[in-house]
Length: 138
View 1 (cartoon, rainbow, N blue to C red):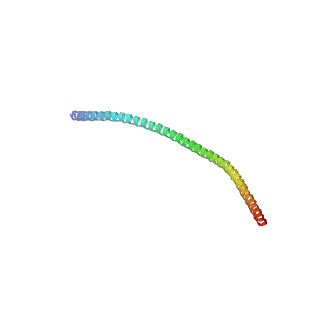
View 2: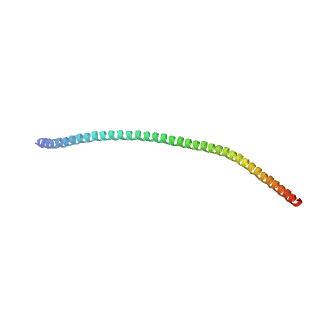
View 3: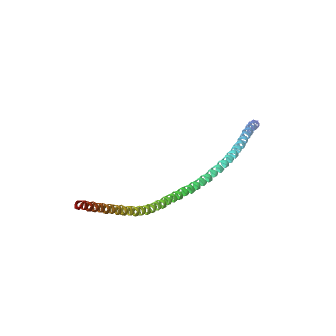
């Protein structure tokens, strides 16, 4: 009988263990499902991170291209400014030379007019002196 009691105890324990094993099996299935969902989420996040990295690389390339264009544009502007400055200086030099020539021509004309004025005044003084002498002798 003692063995029958032990068998009965063992049967009760086995039936209790079956319930626990079923609960463990259900828990393992739920953990498996959760692991599957976590794997899917990680895959989605990995894809998003990869897409973000690609976008970052494209942005970096765009920034490099933009920087290069700005640099080239600045060089072109500086070159255009130097060319304009050189052209303006050359034009100013030519105008200065022409104006100096014109001023010299005007100066020569003024000198001739002054000489003419003095000649005329000399002639007038001579004529007046001659007429004064002529009036004195008459």
